[in-house]
Length: 546
Image 1 (cartoon, one colour):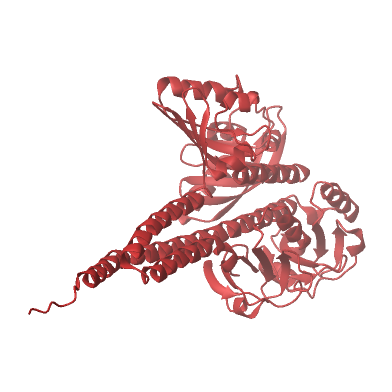
Image 2 (tube, rainbow, N blue to C red):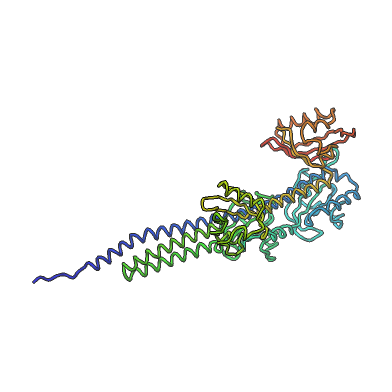
């Protein structure tokens, strides 16, 4: 009688299925974990870039104001503000004050430090001889800016900028000072559309906080948070990861005292956990899915394998959707068919253009009738007809925001990519306004400005420069030949051509010339010109005054 052993094939099959499951599952799990780590790394890089971009915005505004103040100081000293009578000086500053922002105050003090002329009349008679910025400006004859101080007229923190004015022998006889009230910082930051979790801090060189956004009155006037104090004197801008005052980890772009605007510390930080929340949530969802799959795999190898394959496909779909969501944070994507009907809009496009409406199936021109027969309408039809890509910048009539569009026609219709460039256009508008303010300041000081390319002999003159030379901008060009035609013959070789030759040979950073001109009507006037030389392309940016 033969005894048979129990059939082991079912158990062996289960084990084989389990092994096969592990062989397939483990690489996939490793792949998903790798994807999660890469997504986290990519998001952290985006946060660092975003914080540095916000820092650039704040610093560019600071530098713009500092440059404007420098131009005002140079214009006032060169026009001879110190040689005016107190009444004439006061009248000049009061006229200029009407064109200045409210956060700027200008004062003129004599060699003993007594203010005798000011845009703030109550400051006359005050002594600033004990102020370090005043002492440094008088001693060096160069422009200085000092540590934050408390204004004696407003009682608010202010940043001083100063430049000595000189007598006919070049000896400093007093100081022109501009106080920048730190309220401009709060006003500027309040106008910016910062992310909800963003924090902007500006401090002076002693580490005292001047401005904080969002507004936190308890922090202004107090020392910086301890981890950031060590970054004050670092020599370069950087992005660091440090815990904030509330203990939450923050990714912070830092501009120390040695970078950006001198004697000011700036940082912009973003809450890391808040910024990483979408990626972390997606990672948790993926991990939970795989944990469930392994638990279910213990009941039966076959069932577990089937569930794993199904869940893996679901996880891949989730990963693709998550990548699409992350991609939509940059560009709006729109697909149109040959009849200009919407076939697809990603989330960013729905937010930027559709304003939450479901436009699929609708005609572009029916949804936005204001675009019909506009330059954008003609450009789109031409691109579709010629099957050639095109791009354009335009302002949305409904949203008021500016967009850059890139359109790619194809056999099925057109793919359109949109980028919100409102901030860039606002920055360009701010730059134009800054130039307008400088022009007003120079006009008030009866000074002109010009750019000069020493290689081509051509440049750009302000209207005030044409007035000084007695020339008509509609008739005369801003060229070396035109300039030579008005220079007094006795001053040309000695005071101008020779000075330029020596300046270029010695590669000086600044040049100052004094010479006579003969206006077309025959009037002879003395002109003082100062300029800063760039040896990239040989160009000179100057301010001239008669």
